[in-house]
Image (tube, rainbow, N blue to C red; front, side):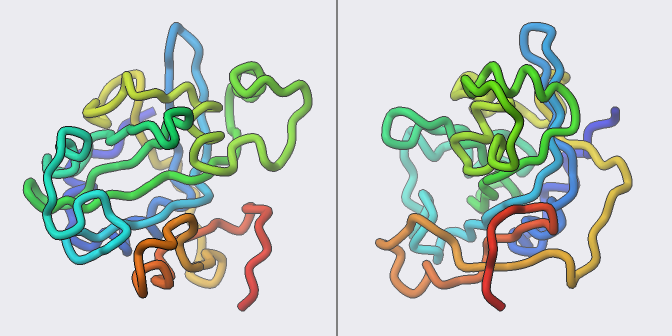
Length: 199
C-alpha cells in the first residue's frame, strides 16, 4: 500500500481537501498490528481567521506548533485530558490549516479495533467520533508531529471515490465558542456514515 505524497497535503484549499479525504484509507501498524479504516468523516479548520481553530489569529502555542509545519504531518492532541484527536496538518509551511479525522469504517483489523475500544460486537459506531476513531486505530499523542509517510501511520488511495452527491456536508460540531464560524458546512460525511443529516 503506497502512502499519499506529502505534496498532496500542501494545498491551501483545506476545505476542498477535507472533502477529498472522504474515501481515502487511514493505515496504522503499531506493535505489529495492522489496522486500516476508510475515512468517512472529516472536519476542516482554516486558520488564522477561523475562530474554531487552535491557530485562530495566528496564535502560537506549544500545543499547536505542528500546525505551522508544512502539510503532511500528524497533529494529535488530548481533548478533556482523555480523548486523543488526530488531525492532518495541511497547506504550506506557516499556514496553520488542519483537518480533523472524525470517523472511519473498518477495512482491516476490525478485531483489533474492537479490543482497543473494549467492545465485543462490531457496530456502525465503532470508528465514529474523533476520540473513538483514534482509539480504534491506536493513535495517541505519541504520533504527534509524525510525517504521514511513516510506515506506521499514513493515508493511501485504493481508487475508491465518491460522487459529489454522495458526500454530505454539515456544520462543524462541539465549537459553540466559534461564533458564526461554527455554522460553516466544513464537516464532510461519506455515504456509509450512519448520521442522518437533513438537507
